[in-house]
Amino acid sequence: MESPQRRATIRKEAIVSEDYPKGPPQTGAVSRPEPADLFSADGAIRQAALERYLALKRLAGEFEALKEQLKAALGAGAAVEPGPVAARLDIRQRRRLTAAEVIRQLELSPAEVARLRAEVPLVDCRFLAIESNGAGEAPDEVAF
Image 1 (cartoon, one colour):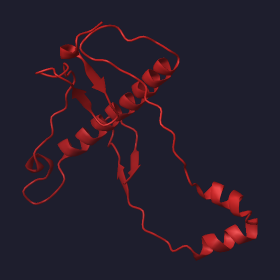
Image 2 (cartoon, helix red, strand yellow):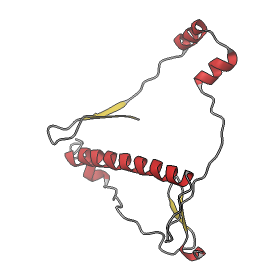
Image 3 (tube, one colour):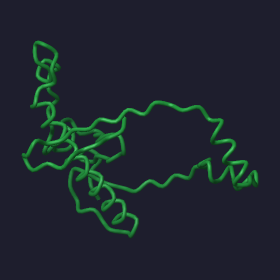
């Protein structure tokens, strides 16, 4: 069995070391730029900031795919090789009150649902669109 001194736990929020002075090895760490690196003196957004955004978005996609693969493997009973980083799959139950479940529970008719939807006030949704001017990147749109 692995000693507690070399054990770390992967959690959704971060990698947390337990009794390990230096923590798990960090590879591929991405440094955070200073705000001055993102904007020019006149306040314009620098091309470097847009390129960084696109690079981080690709990394985020890789991260999500790997996270789902790890969850599936752990859920199927895969073992983790010995080393300074451990992984486990935590399963929590919660109630999710969705619009569909409310409609079902209250037995609302389609007309009643349409009336309720019409009464809900509109809200602004902001989208960031970043498009490449020929560097091979596809247009990108992300809501925040």
